[in-house]
Length: 124
Image (cartoon, rainbow, N blue to C red; front, side, top):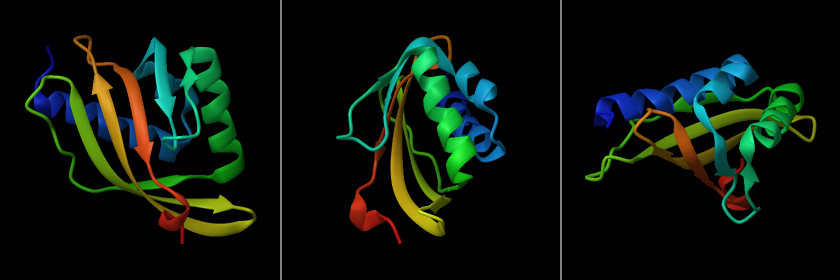
């Protein structure tokens, strides 16, 4: 099982790769059958093919840049929570989204699930 610092590094690497626009690098962090929900309540995106399409859209249309807060671990050897601030172009204008992303990370140190907690009032 990966240590808590190793799991936190995966969550940080995810943010770095999204900021870099590295879709294939993002996918390397996920298990092939991984599921994300971003934001929670909008339905799941599952598997590498769907994730590739999802992140290609993010990279091509939003130009997201992510700044991270301090990652938080759990007493279980699975979860990491990461407060983030995303700057992106939404509807043609720069917007800032405050989120808390929660990652479930397996024994292989890969993401199996990711939930992004943000809503309309978290966009400015």
